[in-house]
Length: 314
Image (cartoon, rainbow, N blue to C red):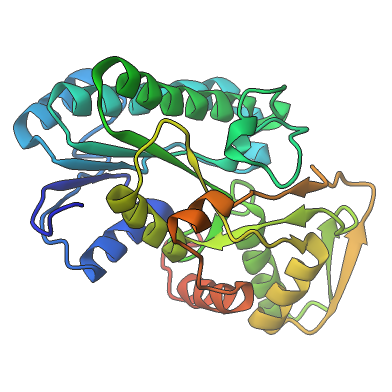
């Protein structure tokens, strides 16, 4: 168990996941949190990361820093996504090990699993077949981080763990018109349609794909829970075990935002993968379950969107 006054470094504390982990640690009474902004510490610079760890020597590390984006962002910058993510995670994990960090938790993504993985996806389907090409660069970087943690455990007896979340949403999300994920993009589109008095909104595909969504504060709660209750080389899936069609999701967002017009579907546009659901029985067997239902989470997220001065720029 992490001591309440232990020195805990949260890498990526300004992002959606990192900021949620900081909120959760504070809520649970952890008092000695270390953070650095990107301007203060560029995690892609090995010398800077080594100097930071040598000076601070954190007891525990939550590695939530990453370069992230939706399909458009991933496909247009494959090399950047691979390099930035691989270099920053290797720097942090290696420096944590060199400086005697007691435990590290690496945050990945469910995109690490094969494109044609059996549904729902269990942790042990990793590397059993080919990845989805559109985000292969990001997935390869995340798999490398996960495996480096595992190999350190096996070679040096460290206690480094990893968690792989499903689609996340919540406060501090990225609402950029082209670089955001599906749920924040929908929130922005319906909000702007309502503000402009539009009578209809057109969405991509036919609305049939199934997706799973986890509220980010629930993920943060699991991250702290795993740091205190789990050790092992295999990752742990983070999700709800429930899925919703994109059509149903769209209708919930429209309802929460208050858009009363028509929703049309452009079936000439691609649907993407038909189904992506995580098997969350491992986390549940450890004694953890999510608490925020989708509509409640979307309400909280829309409140954040309305009060988020950065939303237009991101």
